[in-house]
Length: 380
Image (cartoon, rainbow, N blue to C red; front, side, top):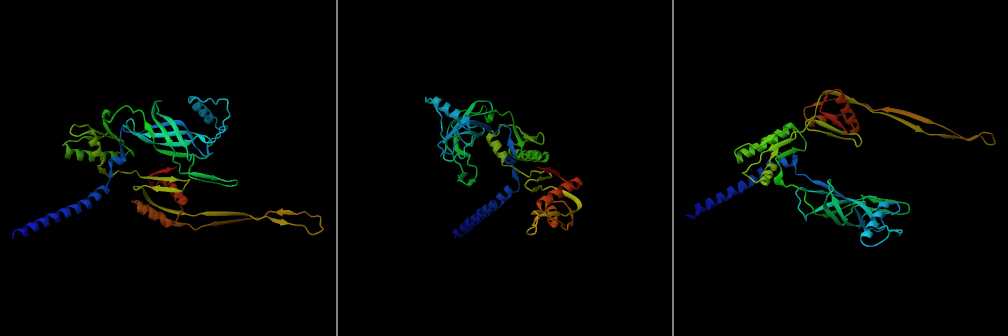
């Protein structure tokens, strides 16, 4: 008789756990999808990459390397390399086509220790047609201060290729550029550590006063519940300063702040690229009520010359008589009223006119001139 209540209690507990787990699975993604993480829209000042570059040689190419007579720097580099190996080729006329001079670039992540490896990018400098199958010889990589921070070496991974015949050539991708995954070995660390930062400053990738205030409020709301005090303040539209505390490890503090979510504000902006016909309209773009009509005038000029031949046994000459046909056609334009408080209304109004991207660009520029476009128009 005592087992039935026990079973009922166990069943009730299991149902509660399942219900709570289901609620957590539903509520968790909804909370994450409701905003943007701070670490996705802001970076920590002082924690950045450092660019490295170097000059090297790639060997092992299948006749697709530099022509030494055209790329003299490749010949000089090869001679200097062989001289260091004890081989004198100064008076020899080198004709090899399996070597190419390249530039090697890489990004050194922050606080990377000695012995770590990073990826490098290799690009050709001479007239080599392809770097496929080549191997980069050891190349020192220097920073902006002239010091060597890494050394790169290894086989190249090239995705592009080129095939050439006597009358046709086929090229896909860029065969004169490649990458070496984990191809550089760190030899020197960048001075400074995370603990040496004078203060924790989060810099917004898209500076905005409202977004900076939202980040500060989100951090303070979290710190009040965790530490009982406010630790963040917005310095300007770009930076949010966070006070260091002894209650939490600095690394954990930055990690916790980075996972906080906000709704970043976006400026009202319309970006137009006339070369590709691309139009990007921001969410907050508004157009005051305005009537727009747009029509296209097409003028076609056709040249159809005729040959006039003289009669037989006459003294006339065969001449070409020009003949030109000019036709003009103007399409009927639709008069539409544009205006709306949101992006959907604006796009719906532009679609009613039935325009091409180039026509939409012309209309947006005219609406901006009329003062009805309540946004910044950026023409690229």
